[in-house]
Length: 384
Image (cartoon, rainbow, N blue to C red; front, side):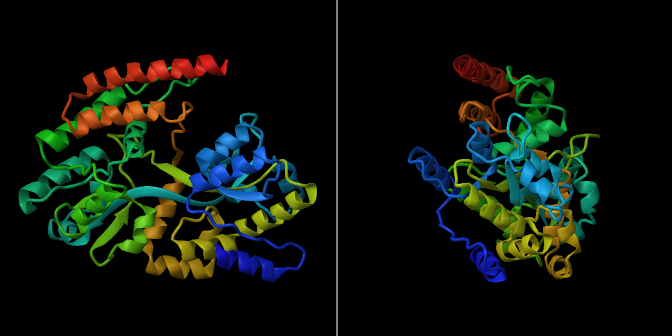
């Protein structure tokens, strides 16, 4: 980011961007909240999509539609639409522009797939074909076929591919006890606990279970795992390759994608807001976005980044990044918990019961749906 800021400041003499580094997006969010209370806001900030949505719906962000309409070079339709959805408030106004993205997909061992003559496109066509391949891998190699990552979003991905959802369309009812959810989670439970062709790492401090899952594949205990695009810098691609997520049965994959968003604070002085837009527009240029993503390992937000010669060369050396972008194009917005985490906790508890404690899926999902519904009802009651 510092490199891009320096590039921008050197490219013109009308606007100077001064970056204020924070340790994470939560810290940035708290700093912005404090600045709003003190009535001394920064002109621009960079936040993940959850905080962006919250700020947009609280009317703290400047709508950007009029800025973009005046900017004939911006090309809004070049940005992946799924990411733009994170920048819209409840009234449909665009209040933030995607800066960069990330998504989770499969990494698999080249040697195992080659030895067993497994076609990755066939293996990762669906979770059912992955389960069949995992059985073969267990029989022939004595290792697990796949490690689903311990991340609640991943299981939402699978359930959504099967036709499920977390909330009803009117957002008043918890729906993670549906037939689709039960089918998905019961299948995963059986594959992990009964067939023992998959495994899941959990517990530990911080990212410990994540690193254990990565190590399972790199060290040959498992043939494949779901990881993040951010893992690319830590992996050896002589050992592994990447592939988009599977669908469910005949349904296509519905992987979640995340975005970090650039936004302008509504209460900033007019001159600073105009300057902030110049910075956001610069950062969103295809050549700049591509350069940032090559430096950082994140995924570009514009289709035209794929046409930048330097980025094409980068993809030739880093084909997993092309997989990441391909998955971004078929991605869906991730579930944002309106209760501030209570629905998430109930769903995580259900996942733990099923995948860790081997409780039948219908029992666990039904029990935790009741907990989540009470929390949602309370939230809706207070909101009204």
